[in-house]
Length: 181
Ligand code: 5GP
Image 1 (cartoon, protein in one colour):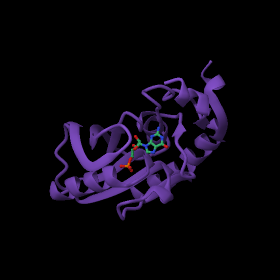
Image 2 (cartoon, helix red, strand yellow):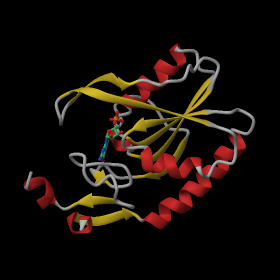
Image 3 (cartoon, protein in one colour):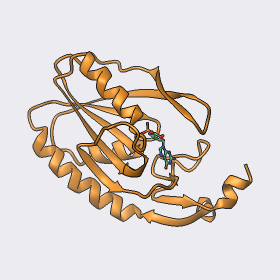
């Protein structure tokens, strides 16, 4: 049903599963004995977070943060507002932020600064997708699933008007979907 709205698939479900296992292996090595706090950025990171944590063979804890950008739907002002904060005190903890995509980098730059200000011991980022051409702020993820071109993508957590988050792959929408809204 959702598939009729998709113009083309960029990354298949199988490719995502393979990459999650590869990243999980690296993270398992790097986080042994650190009991990291894995911070999911709602809502887009939920499917990726569910997969990546099950690929990490180490003790870890989970928490979630929800942030939104001020501004209207198309132009972000660059300011970030906390909608839901963590429940956990991050002081002295090793944090691993899980994101769906890094575009301008503003959201993550804000979160990294915030967690450093709160005295986290280390702050690293794992993102499913990276859109390097969209970058406005100088920030890079430590672990990247896939690079994507500067196009609007949906699926695997990523939405268009809150829909398509449950697509099991990453795709590009048909232009008719935007035109009908
Ligand atoms: P940044 O602060 O890096 O510009 O924005 C990151 C957020 O913007 C992501 O968490 C995501 O919600 C949204 N975003 C950026 N690019 C895309 C895209 O191609 N598709 C969708 N669905 N959301 C995107």
